[in-house]
Length: 149
Length: 155
Image (cartoon, rainbow over all chains, first blue to last red):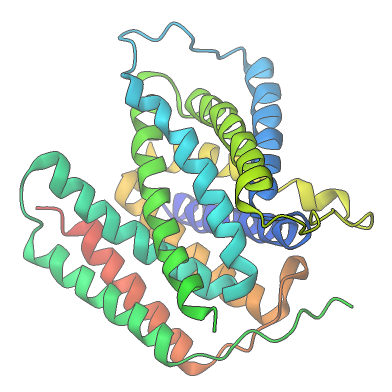
């Protein structure tokens, strides 16, 4: 259990690393090119891994619905948006605001998919997240200038 | 001040991320997490290619010079996609452990916030350095507490 907790924590820092690097590239090349590089490099890297494992699943049974292929489109937009805001907001605020949006959207998507109103505990969670976002707005130390010359 | 726009964009980005995860996990349930991620990266590359083109031809004001990549940009600037794919593999491991999906998401969120604090403090990966103040910890606590209630408060 402890090992898996550490792995999941490590995974959070791996995500942060990816976003920091993409954010850095965005400053040089623009957010859309940063997203393009992220996806091309990731695609090539995963191709090598899948070749090594021989674990292709082209003939999935049952066939996935068409909507299952929408993820890449939202991913391309997400990486562009996140790469743009990351250097402007700083790593921590970018992470906290993205988490907030992600969590609130998850509640809304569950509501839409299941047609059941979110539980009182979830509503309380959304309220606390919103309070957190509000506090990021009012208590801010703006990022210092890029220390790179 | 561009702050409000950045702030709104980041929250909207979170919603895009939730949509991405929603559709990707649908594909992963029919295949494997790694294959689903491979497909998503391929289609995402195509989508990003179109976005680059649209931005260059339509959105950019005429006459503005291209933001040319400076020659000194080191190779690792282009490799953010590699840790991005490792995330999917690590998550597949922990989701299938006793942590399950909720535990995996929770600890990944905590890990992201810890990374954010350390990265801002030291300016890791040549990102802007930012002093962490006491209220930052309060904000982190609120967002993580609220997220935990959302993750575990599913009716």
